[in-house]
Image 1 (cartoon, rainbow, N blue to C red):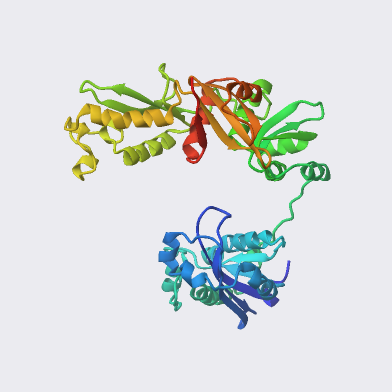
Image 2 (cartoon, rainbow, N blue to C red):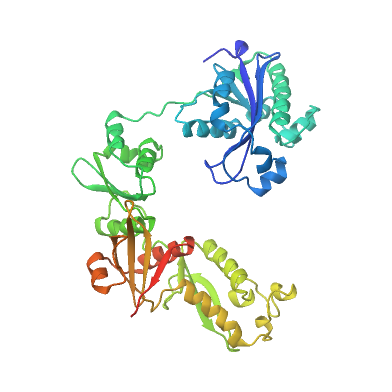
Length: 462
């Protein structure tokens, strides 16, 4: 490892758009090259992330889309970032975040960005123990380090330079700093596994992992088959390690639609019972939505464990996802919190107190009026007695997938070209491959429909 005494550091801070993990974009970057005594080079720039900035980030940083319209895009500043960090150890407060963001941006350009890293949070915890907080703002304040422009890249990077200087001075024999330098390990994928990966597509579908005896040992589904297999082959948990040892070949079936992949995965696991599919629990959902009519004539909705006798309206993987759904229904359909089991009270619910509930909780609203709205929820989220076709993505351009429900029963799925008259019963029958209709299938379809609001649904005549 490089001796840290003669090391050059690139001390940086990055502001991002926020949003989903690994989908964030950079909005501002500040880098100070530092030789352990002085700043020897610097680069500060706003960056056009070419994506939306989350509102809470705008409030935090003050950086909004208007400010970034004329800013350079990442590819325009990438060369400068490579140069100023070349042969440097990257230093940042919570370096794993900043380094991940940089690597992700370079990966989008097809460039492998690799540097040693140092985290000033970890260093501070070792060299200045027992501080009340290690957040950059509070830590610099406690240590009397002046700071301007908090939550802007330049202000935060400059504060990190001053903090790092202090940490270097505290580490008298430079051993702690030297040992804190992280070198990224190259992933060690065996050659035979690499060969398997090369054959796989980066598309949605179901994959089958076989051992040398030709037995299926694992079945999975993914929106990116290749990426998922790479995760199996680089994973360090015991299941991944066993798979890596036993795998001989991987086959796959493209489905285009995630719903098709979910249904096929469930059916194939039940049929083949592979040894590493621990998901062979009795059922893939634990809770469900039920209803009953109370003595005042109001339909009550409630979430309960899914092992009741009666048929549920819809099902959930966990109690908390059921609760989350119920809160949304109260909001969207103007339902009563008390009659949906969200507010335990003998009198009126909280929503009534803030004038947002029409009083079903205290028999003020006409039960018929209230029940109409409850029926809308039941109608929307249950396909009991319905005849319909769910249309989703296909495996190629010009193709769609179709899932047939007849009288509330899932009949099967198939693929069709866009020029087909799919509401013609005879054509439809020839396209659909029959599939098992069971509780798991119903759960998969209903939760997929809840998550994908824009799915195309075609009502069919009985």
